[in-house]
Length: 228
Image 1 (cartoon, rainbow, N blue to C red):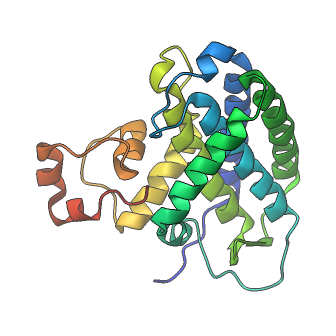
Image 2: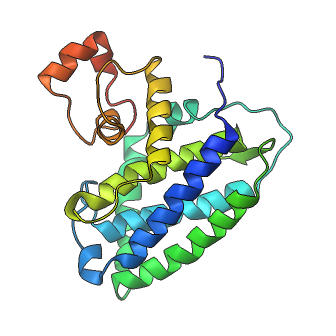
């Protein structure tokens, strides 16, 4: 399929909003709250934050890897390829739990997370929209690179808050980027009147489709989850 690149400013605005919000949320949580269950099977809130911390390190590597090569991946095609290896996912899930449990207390993990978050926010603020980055054997325009990490943050933000009813929801711009990504993977605007957060959870398999939703989607229902 031909590549369709994501608008840089829209991606950067969403990135800055969502990661700043996640930083505030993580800093507000007590050790007890960090040990609550998340929406990710087998992971507590602190485990999801550990996964996000690993992702922040990957973002730093990506920003440090500019290239003159032509882009071969966009904000949607990245997700078509990234989650195909179930064994890798299980190994990563176990690795994250081991790393998160190595901290003497969950709040110490948050201190590391916040330093990395501050670094990526500063780099994103200074990023140029006409660049390309060599990342995970792909080449993405900077806007598409940021958009993929917006989706990562928005979806895991939803995972974090399943037992935190007073926590703020993901930043609206990040959920809008997530909707754009899911629609691009679907090949059209989704024909169901979901709000952005519900679409994010249905599109990534966090929530199952109901019978009525399957009927409304028709043959498209077989495509769900669009990625997980």
